[in-house]
Length: 236
Length: 332
Image (tube, rainbow over all chains, first blue to last red; front, side, top):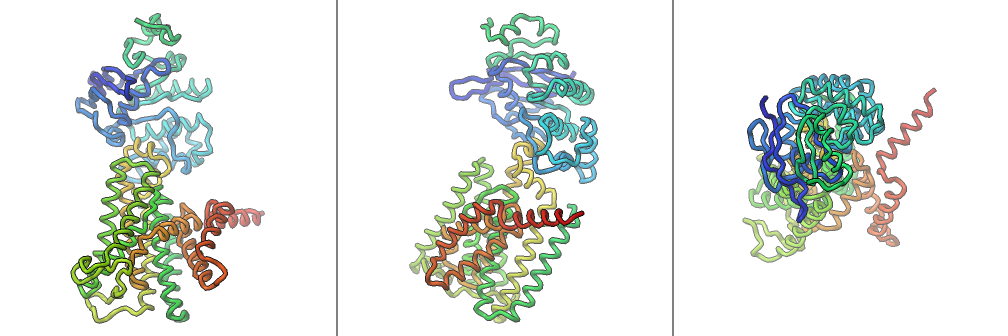
């Protein structure tokens, strides 16, 4: 498989705190990768480095072999990377359809077609003409996901996509992510283990800014070190 | 660009109002009142420029008067030197636009936050105010145009017909030009907001991070809108120079603050609101100036406080909301 996104020795420092410390990993075409770890493990900082929101202190990021470390978020998005933030980041004053229509496209008609298809694909076609600011949290998460999916990116990066969702909504999100993975490579940054169990194939475990282990979901969940880091125990 | 019926009607209505004002008012108003009306219109255009970039682009420019003053001064200096306003006008539009683009580049590409943007723009206009005030000596002459320090350039030439410097516009004609310029700028602003560029600019105001994550260069869109605002403010400066004359006051804190008040009182997030706010407040302060018992500045302050408390969304959005409620109540 070809590597879509690769990081080499990625490091992010905030003064004396090293939030991400020499992380190297590769995301392949069509892959569904979960990045897990307890709070403060460096997952979200790593996510912000990948999406250009933070410029790493050291290390490099490659997209299909091209160095994109210095690129801004908009330039990374243009490469074909769909990005969903932890807190839904939406245009509250617009309807769901208007918001999703803002995805980059060749023409107005094409934007509308793609937007409607994305909304229907996520099962929220009926909300197309509702104002986003008036929607419930779970619906807002889905509208944002529609914005991410509409331009049909090669890679989708999701930061805690189920944050604030009910159990039912989380189960539905898991189904959706598996379905989306049939067409897009996906990276999910998450700490909800139930959700990860439902979707995961390959899991990378973060601990104190470093990669603790990277393996199949079954192996990772069976490893006592993973349980220990979630329980806050020291890990060698 | 797709123009919906509502936008088309708003543009047509604005152009009809501008056309009627340009046709009727010169016939009925006295010369002094007409010159005052031209000042109001030029200020209305200045308010429109800020209403566009602040209300729709989320760019709080506390020093919109910098471009207003630069437009006026460039026009006066160029008109005196060329002896003809034909090329002075495009130059006076180009210079404030270029200055706005340069300042915008430093702010947006420097990732300056909103609060500091307000401080930087205000400081810019105050520096220009200070500088313009210190240009009193003979050494401060550009070509044949003395900058005049505190007194400004009283001999600012009025507009002339293109390539015919001997045929200058009468105050009535300057009024017509000003009203049409305001109407056209409103229409252009409306159309800009219907383009993809405009819609993205509004989206950036709503959620900058999301717009960026959708692949839009936020800095470039803000820069574009800011430069358009600079262009319109520069045009307002040219019109103002035609009915008063250019002086450092154009850059002053008093003017810079007033524009903010006009926009807030009229209604931020609308284009007509700031123009209405400007006209009403100007008319009121002019009237208050004739009364010895009331200080116009005090009146302006009280009015602003009242507006913030009673109509926090501004006059136009509040009036629209009330009207819509009344219409719904009337429905069966």
